[in-house]
Every structure is written in structure tokens, then in C-alpha cells.
Amino acid sequence: MPLTTTANSADRRLTEHLADVTLEEARSRMVVGQLINYASIAGSRTKTWQGSRYDGTGDALAGTEGVEHTYTEQITGTAFTVTPTEDAIAQIEVTYDDIETRTGLAGLAELMNQGSFEQKLAALMPEARIAGAMVNEKKESDLIALFAGASRERSASTGNPLTLALFDAALLLLCTGEDLPHKNIVACLDGKQVGNLRTELRVTSGGVAGSLWQPADRFALAGENGFVTNLLGVDMYETGVNVRNTINSGADVTGAMFLRGGLGSPEDGDNVLPGAFVNVEGRPLQVTIEGGHRPRSAEIQVNSKSKSAERIDNWVVKMSSGA
Image (cartoon, rainbow, N blue to C red; front, side, top):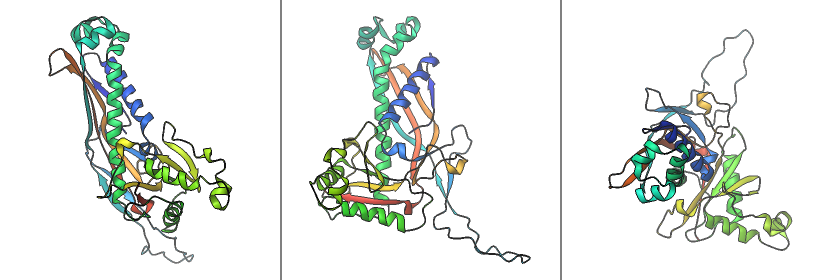
């Protein structure tokens, strides 16, 4: 998800406003994207961002007063780099008929030269919102694809459902591999996986489910930002069908449990929680409005340059399962 916006057209105020709307449209629909760190190298001469991995640093050593301390235990971290690319481009055409229907003005030239700011928004805002959703979907899909690359996992065998026992095992693995910098842990699961857990927990009495999950409707449907419920101290989110990542011939789906990251970047001095994933912005989100390649249309293009990456592998546990 981009952090900032920029715009290009004959009416800069209009495209800046559309860029802001597009950005907010993307933010409101992000699920995984709201749970990661963000950094930006926009405006920098460098095209690559560098972070550091400090997993398993261990304890400091004791010293002796008056005795020179050695540095054999010094921790320097492992550097990793992220190079943003044009990761999401959405392009939509608005026909002159649509412009005239919405504003009474005939075509792009008349709209830009004679139309009021409100008329321009009325003509182009619907497509700008759609473009924002398209950019978001691509970025969300790229993030979910990173789940499959995690080296640690607690998954069901091919074709079998995700269970509460596997969910608990993933949490145990995440928390016992090393001392984590914080315990703000989230799980982002496919809708099929959320359904598996909802079915297992929908019981009338007995066991963990009976004592913690009555009434059954506490396991709510996903809200606008994907939040479902808190399970075993872990905030659980449901990702969308359009960004579903199948990982084998059995069409198993994949989710993950990982450390939540705050909006910002600890490496860049921001006072936020370090998370398992980071997105690096190469330049602000761009919106352009031009005459379309096809006659009698206006062309809106939204262009994003960024890249998402895993920061520390031990802060992620993959969770795959069948239907």
C-alpha cells in the first residue's frame, strides 16, 4: 500500500484529489496490508532500501570494573535490501458518453476547460475508486504470496481442513523459536480456513470451545478491514477470495501467523512495532488523466511503485489447508 500520492494532468488539483481518494480506497480494503511496516525512498537518489535482521541476538555479557571489555559478542545484524518496482498499474477508460451523462459536458476537453471542479469529480471519481481497488488487490495478492515462502509451518495434510490444534501449534512455534520483540501476533487466513475454525468451535458444551466460544455468534463475519475475532490471544483476519493463494495441485490455500508491524519503519527511526513484513515505496502513488488511445474516451491511470518483503523468517509461520 502506497504511503503518499502525486498526480499529473492539466488540472493538478483534480488529479491530486483523485490520487488521495484512490489511496484511501486502497487503505480501506487492505487486510494484510494494514498489518505490516512501511518505508519510503521516494525522492531519494538511491533506488534500494536497506534493512537489518536482528533475530536471536541473545543476552548482553557481564563485565568487570576496571577491566577492558571485549567485543567478541557484538551483534551487527544481517542486512537485506528491497528494490521497489512498478508493482501495480490500473488503467480505466471513461467514455465521452459517460462524461456527458454525468455532467452534461461533451467530452474530455470540454470537461477540463469548462467544467467545474465538482463536475470533474462527478465524471471521473467512479473510475478512480475502481482503480484504487484494483491497485489494492494486486498489492494484497503480492503480500499473501509471501506466506508460501516461509520456512516454518504448521499445516494440514493435503486436502484436510485447518484445525484449532494446528492454530495453537502455529502460535507455540512462533513464540518458542526465539525471544520476540513483542507479542502483538496476528493470523491472516483464507475464508476457507476461517470457516474450518468456525465449524470446529461451534459446539454446545465441553472443552475449550464450549467454555470460550458461547454463544457461537461471537465468531463474527469479517468486518470491512477483515477482522474476525481474537482466538487464543491472536487477532484473526480473513483475506478476500480474489487474492486467494493456492499452493498445490490439491488447491490447498495458505494463510500465516506473524508479528504485526506498525505503519512506519523502525529502520528509518519511526517509533512503531517491527513486523514480519515491510513494504517499501519507490515513489508516491501517481494518477494521470489523458485522452484515451481509443477515440472518444478519457483514460485514467493509477501507477504504484513499491515492493513487499519478509523481514525475518522466524517471525512468520505458514498455515496451509484444504477445503
